[in-house]
Length: 432
Picture 1 (cartoon, helix red, strand yellow):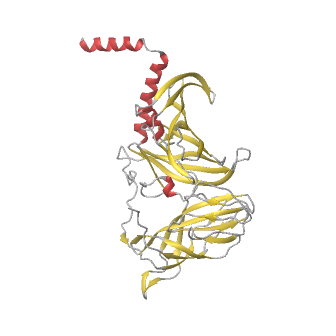
Picture 2 (cartoon, one colour):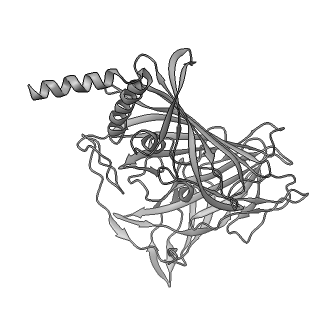
Picture 3 (cartoon, helix red, strand yellow):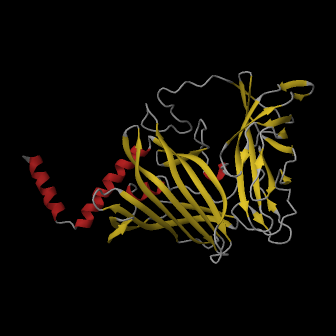
């Protein structure tokens, strides 16, 4: 009797609430179920990056980046596609240059609906993509969602506010938009906006509501803009665990166990002569693509064979930036991070010493002290300094294991069998 009375009082209390408030509560319940479900999934995030010097000019393609994204607790985690583990680092640490962002997968949505810190106001009914939708505006305090922005001229934190739309019939979230507000004086940012669209994905016969696409636009005080268009695809569920473990991914049921290998410390000072086993075609390649090479000679140190000929070396394509200004060209970066032979596997850090001359190869960059000439025109992106003059100077972050060079033309090909020489360096230490 007491329980029945409580239920009746609750219904009477709800009946006195405005319709939009009741709908907001039901939308929040749906989002909570969605967020709880999303920790079982990881998706391939494909990012088309473009830039322009001012609003009067069209965006020009820069590159296409691919990452794996998942959710561990309240935090989005990332890795290169096909990697065995998620990284504790942010995408900015994985990717050498350019604009990257976090929050589009689930982090911002969790802050708006689950953190109990957002101020939400009803805006009315609208049509979105041909469907009747309910629109609400929201505002987040800085302690509810810290949008961290790092630019060449400074860094800082901004608040986020924006709008979300839910399907008027099903109450599923259709779109979540955000814009940066309360920009600190030391941050050379004029505006930043993001938009994430959601939809149904079918996986193993189950329908799952996940992000489908997103777009981030950033404009600096000088007028330069960068735009990331993001697509989420190839989402998959991990069985046997309700969450992704921090630092590693639970293997899918039925997947063969990886062969055991012994760890191997790669010493500094080794000269590695290798050939590229993976062709790189600019019309098909994407940043994050796997690369493989093979040693063509024994790696010797102090007259002792440390790594034998035919050892397999694996890495990633780290840069593929296209520019049509001045002489059409690409800035290409390749990274080799792992070497395997005879049941041993070691982490590889090195500098590119030489690369076989192929059509279009103009200049090699191996550290931030090098500069490339012969090219005219230029632009500026986060992480890269370019002086617009008759000579283009591009300063590159000195990343162990990454070699950077120019390929001129509107397209290029690094053929299988391309010869390169790398020299191993000491493992970089984190600053204290």
